[in-house]
Length: 104
Image (cartoon, rainbow, N blue to C red; front, side, top):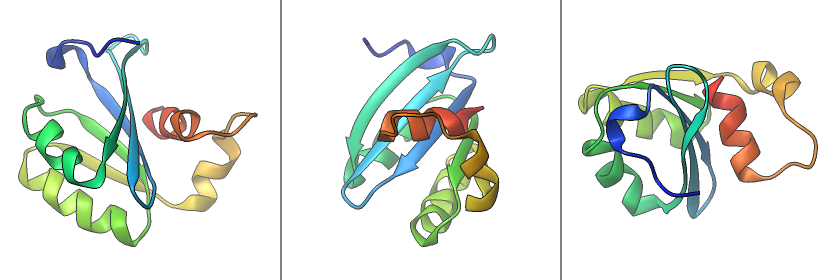
């Protein structure tokens, strides 16, 4: 899926892994407009060029550090405890589906 113009992303879900981060961006209607896999070093640079949006991530040690960086860039970051993310996971687990769960 091609990356969409940055102004279309209203909500962003991020799945944090050890070395890679999966991003799913939704427009105001809830349609997927961004689907991207980035390395740890690319995330802040990619989101620095994006207009402010709502970002959802599962709470963990790495998420707290990243959320502080994204808040400094002007984004609205929400950390979701794992117990509240689990019921929304879809079958056939993969990292993009996890990121999509956090964007809703």
